[in-house]
Length: 105
Length: 216
Image 1 (cartoon, rainbow over the protein chains, first blue to last red):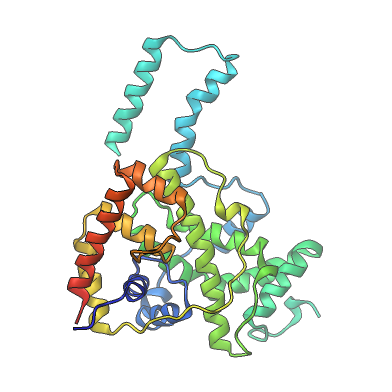
Image 2 (cartoon, helix red, strand yellow):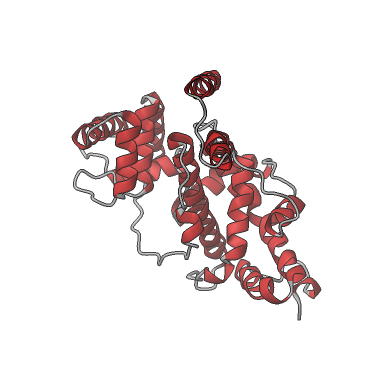
């Protein structure tokens, strides 16, 4: 019985949408199979792209970036206090709050 | 003649990318016109693929990644290499392939942030992409095999799907493959608390399940 190859698995994952299609064959397949769905896809207004490129609006951070920023803020705030540490009980409460918030997500 | 004076549909995708590369420095309005046409032609495709992928990654903002992909394309338009031989369909697919490579880099960066919650200097920021020469041999996958692999993949647990996706992103699924960057391998190990050997075993078992269910 012929065994399916790794390259075939990768190609199948691209064609079925589990990976982004990064070869012409996968792109042609997706174009054909999902033509109607692609045509109906809504994308952000072009003006939003222009504003982002030319810096008229601050680039919206992705959710991942927003999470990083929120986790980095206490450290930055600490640095702004000339490196003085927060009292341990405050740090403990902040960490508990953050853990609870992440659990809710 | 400037692009905005040309009749619609006169410009190929290559014309648009060249115009963006050229005018971005000397005449931003002309570059914007060309970018608008490129966005109109390919925005829905890019957005659709990112949305489909984001269905498995709720933390990913597909709309923002679509914008980021075109922003990156705007800044690196001059690096696109035409290998289409004046075939319009091939050129369209090559441009989309290039956009997908940009999107893949951005996506991987997003995933690093999501999973590790640390800031990284990104591949996508540092390595503005050129489209590599087309030397990849792409296998034909029958509709039946495609359906079976798809069905098998969604039955894997999320960790195994993530492991398979990460290896597959780099074309590193094979047992003897060493093309998975060590930082990505280390990240998987740390994310799931696995040793290198355990990670390879997880990947191997998941692959075996895909093969078993996908083989005709």
